[in-house]
Each structure stands twice: as C-alpha cells, then as structure tokens.
Image (cartoon, rainbow over all chains, first blue to last red; front, side, top):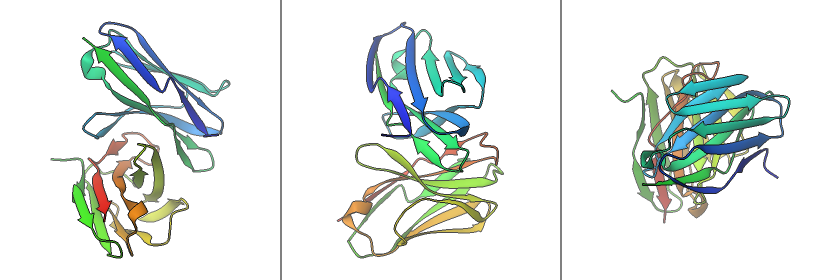
Amino acid sequence: KNEVEQSPQNLTAQEGEFITINCSYSVGISALHWLQQHPGGGIVSLFMLSSGKKKHGRLIATINIQEKHSSLHITASHPRDSAVYICAVSSTGNQFYFGTGTSLTVIP
Amino acid sequence: DTAVSQTPKYLVTQMGNDKSIKCEQNLGHDTMYWYKQDSKKFLKIMFSYNNKELIINETVPNRFSPKSPDKAHLNLHINSLELGDSAVYFCASSHRTGDGYTFGSGTRLTVV
C-alpha cells in the first residue's frame, strides 16, 4: 500500500464542471504538495499546504490534518486544465512520497 | 531566463556507459532535488540537497551519485548504465521550507 493514495485515477469532465480530486496519506507530514503535469511532461507546483485552505485562481486546495486528507478542487473547469494531478507529501521523517496521479480530461 | 534548467533534454546511450545530467537553478533556493519518473509515470524522489549537503538519499543504486558544487547546481552522475535506468529524470528546487517548489523540464534517458 502506498503512503499516498489518490482518487480517482482517471476523471473525465465536461467544460464548466466542478472537479474534486482526493488525496489520503498514512504518514505524519510537514507539508503536502499538489503538482500538475501537462501532457508535454512538464511539472508545475500548484500548492504547498500544511493546514487549512489555499486558493489560486480557479484552483482550491484544502487539507485536514486530523483525517490525513486533502482535496484539490477546480471550479469552472476548462480543457486547458487537462493534465495529471499529483499529490505528494513531505513526511516528518524527511521522506518524500508521491501519489500515482489523477489523469483529468476536460471535454469542450 | 529558465528558473530550473536541466541538460540535456534527451539522452540516448548504450548499456554500460557513464553519463551525467546537469541541473542549475537561478532562484536562490536552498534545496535541490532529483526525481525519477518511470514508464508508468510514477514519481519517486532520489536525492535532496540543502546548501550543498545531502539530506535525503533514497534507496537508489550506488551507480547514481549526486554532485553539488554550489547551492545553485545539483548534477546527477550515473555509472554503468542499465536498461532499467531508462526514465525521465526531473530536477527541482525549493526554499528550505518547501515554498516555491519549481521543477526542471526533465531529461528523458533511454538506455539501449
């Protein structure tokens, strides 16, 4: 079992839909990261969270430390949001664990 | 100017060769990382350096050796390349706190 589990693995949405990607982890963490990998392969860091909620444009990330769970929300989804979204955690033991990613396709 | 630059972007080499991938960041970050992404697109951390000192060294073969001449550079040397080393290798950097995480564009290594 991975230290970081994401769901769903694959997600197809119509343009304009509200999207949620979930991440659960089993280790103590110092921070949780949400990454975006575009079809061309480049990786972009979207958020780093240690508590609460962060918002950037149409993207919102939340974390519940007690439940060891984080969600990434995309409001008013757009085809350019199509990418793989990866959850990763920096553990308190100075380790780094990645989820297997959620492949999102937004259809016009 | 590219914030985290890796070279080369593509590398095709024969088994048994020794190769290096270079990484440089101009963001003033304290910490640099190397990650491997396998054919199933699963990312795994290999090494992390903070101010030229190794802080994470995951279980990777000792054929892989990171070298950090200064805090803006973290190069990856691979000796005696094997077929299973074929992957995309990403360099990244961040502040010590983890803020400002920035990835390089990746180096696709193919061992034939």
